[in-house]
Image (cartoon, rainbow, N blue to C red; front, top):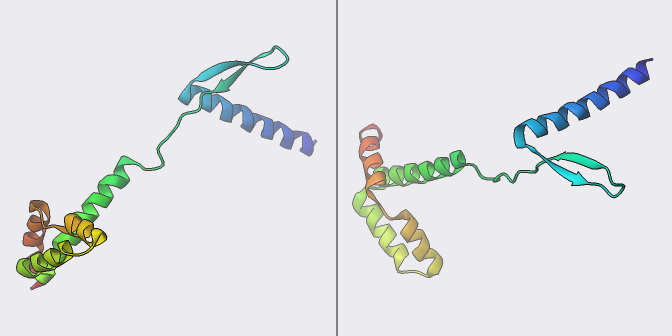
Length: 116
């Protein structure tokens, strides 16, 4: 009796999972080899990277740059970025990314009173 209940619960979970797929993503009719029409959940392609993650990474980059500007000082930071811009390709790309733009400078301006 217990084995039949376990088997029933397992089949019920499979049915509920398929039904959830039908409701969320829709379904698609497919003709099987034996002539039976089968409804299958439509597969959706979901991005492995979310918009929230992208915004978080960009905010982290701005914050790190702002902290570096606040700790080193604006002039010293600009000199270091200029030294990077005279290097090889990877260093020039780093200089482009690390260049002090208004957002990073604003963050540095807000952080500086708490550092010194």
